[in-house]
Image (cartoon, rainbow, N blue to C red; front, side, top):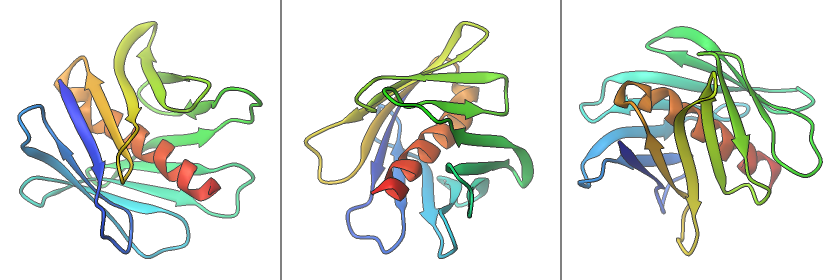
Length: 155
């Protein structure tokens, strides 16, 4: 399953539309005014599916993940020099990133879950997320949202 993650051009807060391969909206992400990033994920019908909430006043960025109102775990940036490193505290997943911070691979016990690649030559942040199993799409999206929010916090 392939998802196109595209930031909206005119938006006061972080807002994204996530499309399937046919161009249909699968998820809508809306940012909220808060200390740190706070992003809510909705399905195409407007039903809230998840929340990504940045913890503030931490040495390195940390993001709490809530799926359907329940705490699911934490994503946080690890200290590293050359390659981006993130720690994922849910689903038993781990992530490997490239040197240029534009491609990531998500694994569970050496089994590929998803890949995320940032596309260049776009006016807004755009990623292609390829998920092996459709049931992992929301969790993979939450990871990519956290990575993109961490990059925005750095700038």
